[in-house]
Image (cartoon, rainbow, N blue to C red; front, side):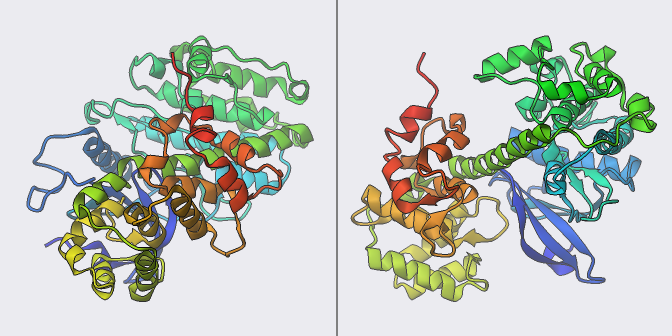
Length: 499
């Protein structure tokens, strides 16, 4: 019988989350090897005895999980070990999720590392391009097209200057005659190639365009295709319209610009392959300048990276909310039962008491919480309530999300009560302020009645700037409350205009 993940690995704290996945630190029991454990939820479609990933009709969510496993197995067979591609150590499959045990990368994301260095040179940028191209060359040789190449998917193995850079996250990757057509989507719009927008098929050239976008940002500090609307941005990508008029481009070498222009060619057949990039003089030789790139470029790069990071946090939080944290389902389960404010406080106190770490709880611990609150009527519903808040199906629920979700059951249930409580739950140090990242989590945890119907259109940077009226880089409760007539200030101002 297949061993369970917990039998072979200690599962530790969360390292990061995406819309439908969570990555945790892990340690192999037999030799204390540190690993990353990526949990891909089956989102409730798997059933005991159904054969794991087989034996039922394939939805897009299911296809994404299966595809990532199949791609990683191809990488194990034909690529690993490779200094620039993440290595899969093991796979575990249970009733609720698939767990990928991966090598642990402790050096951080590509752009974060550059920001920490303060300044960098063309030579440094060429080194980044060389490592990404080396990884892509190996993947393309194995007939794997990544399809979602972006800085977030490039991690350094360790924090030292000589660390290898690894390509990771293969959920959207493509293998001919293997990838289910249901996985017919592409990644982040800023890095997507024209032929992907035209649905002309997956090909290695897709990844080379994305590499060109990364190189463009490294050289000037902003992305090549900027526009006020998504539609306008798509048109710029489809026509390959970008400019290099900004003064700092004058300090960039001809060789660097020539390579970038070739990578950002609309015709995919005219782009260089990964192997050809590796042999390009700017990448392989000494033509890349060692002189530090203009300080203005670095300042723009810092600003771009900060916006990118915040939007990623917001996206993860919002996706979890829209698809998992549905408070209306909670109301349907509970019926007419309401909670008092003291009962809600009891929920928080008992959750902390019975939780092994004071922050998350298992189903068994959650049942003890309900029993201790004398909410016996909820106990038979505990597994279903638990499932609502266990958004990644890893067997744990988060205190803050549960308490914020349960505000929908308050007898008074006033807007002020809900917003104040959610704000307080994310003000971790009780300072009366929350950060940008915490703001994203607050909005993600608010009951769904307080979120826009099409929340994906929100421009979270603009929201933060609007709420942070004194521009001190943090948000007080009063600032938050003043703006959080969510119905009129944020929702109305940032929704897409009606046609």
